[in-house]
Length: 422
Image 1 (tube, rainbow, N blue to C red):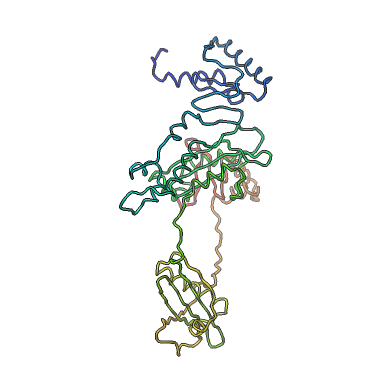
Image 2: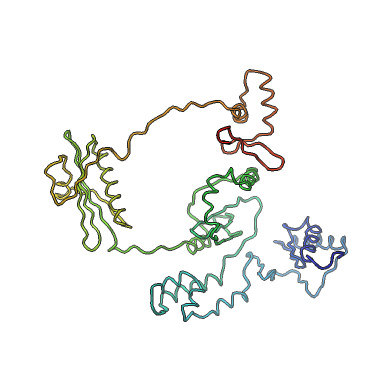
């Protein structure tokens, strides 16, 4: 090469991509000097080999017969096993994981996997329990036998399942055939500290130049979103189960119970709340509503107050129930007087949720209104000259998500805003 041996592999890869551009992706895969010809039947395989040999003769390339294998049902390619079932892992690569011994000190346990470390958290001495050994064996089995990747079948829709947890984003691509979902590709990424703060950017996609570009590129494809339903493929169920973060179990002695009762008549409305917590904690409170409230309104006001009270006490689990026993019935009085002195009394002057106020907002006409009316509904003004101008200018504009964008030269799209926002 005239410029030396720098970037040799990339240059050779570009050469192979250009030579076999008609075959790559259908019957052949090439990575530098590694080539594999794939077919489903013997007849198709012979035809594919004939096409490959024709390309090699045309460009005067030769193969080393000692490194070639023909008519095999399984072969190692880029440290993976290509079989009739799909892309599988190399058993020799998994043997290291299979032979891995159980950790015997804290440092080794933390380096193996974080969930196992949770079993020894808050312990002064290291103790490898039976549950830890079972989790370790399950992890070894999972890493030693990853899911098999199937070949992409043209004409069958692709299904993308996305799993988002606090620190990890994962996705799998599957195809459904004969009532079963087959895994085509999967990817997982651990989010770094800066990547966990993308929420602000995602709420304003018009400010992110690349996201607008992606939305334009994806608009030409038939992509639809559906909420997660039952997943038939076992590998997907294992994938989501393994990736899910298991939270701490809620013990029964940490539960809080909320009992409430309400009363409403012509003289007024009131409610009683009893909050029972662990270790014999008991809080009683009586309410009096200064506003006119129906039975339903008094009920949800009581529930909201009980939830606020439980939140102040940092209750994690709350079980609410309507109780008409004597104690709460006495607390739910409609009168101000006569309330027990040992019970907390509170008067509520206004309801928590009031009726919404409807305000009429007059839509003022701006310079973008004629363009958006024409692009949406093909509406034109009565003036012929102005109508011609709008038709001529509308070619350079596009509507994305109820927002008007102008096609630019230096950037894909320019967001159009009115004077105040600009």
